Image 1 (cartoon, helix red, strand yellow):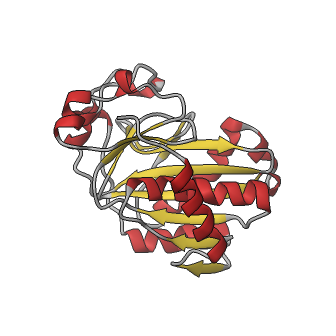
Image 2 (cartoon, one colour):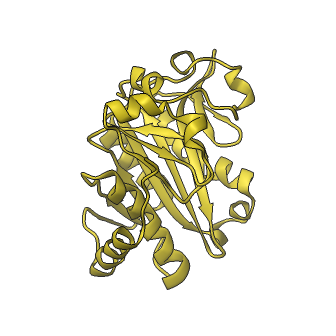
Image 3 (spheres, helix red, strand yellow):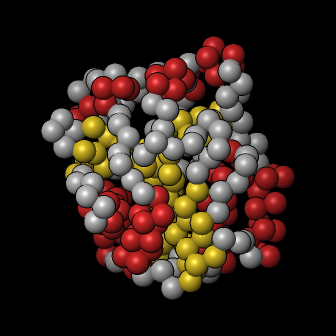
Length: 238
């Protein structure tokens, strides 16, 4: 597995970079990837079948000129920005039998994340099907989504550690599809930041996953594929 700690200035590049790594693993036999990234500016990203009119406060995002994009993976609508650390995993389905089952693959991969957080004194629990939360009362700090191929899985997640949480209330509606543990709580009653040293967390997670190489650069092939995706794909919702 190769660690790529790479963030881009534009939302489109950050989202399509994840999809590029998945494409190369699925179609070209590319390596397993662990990527970290963080957006300097806020933007909204919907899941593959998410509906903007159900999830996004359209008047607010238009007024504040917040980009609204759509990614190719499932999961719910999220607000990105400074203080939200993203981790991306592109892994082979044959690395573990649990990777062949959607629910079990979430539990399997997020256990690496949960244990890395525990080493920093952050005790969390897995909340099916794809969240990590603090306990008593359970408050979500990590949401996750996947795109599954024949050979590989793209898994990406967020970790809120220094995020401007009121922005979530400003730009996102309450989702219609909620996990049971949410109990219809408003955003600010349900979502929280956690104390996190990003550098230490990155190092711990990389070690747990058996990273063998680290780089802050894309290869020539990766840069070429990312450029093609940027030219071909219109991700903007409005």
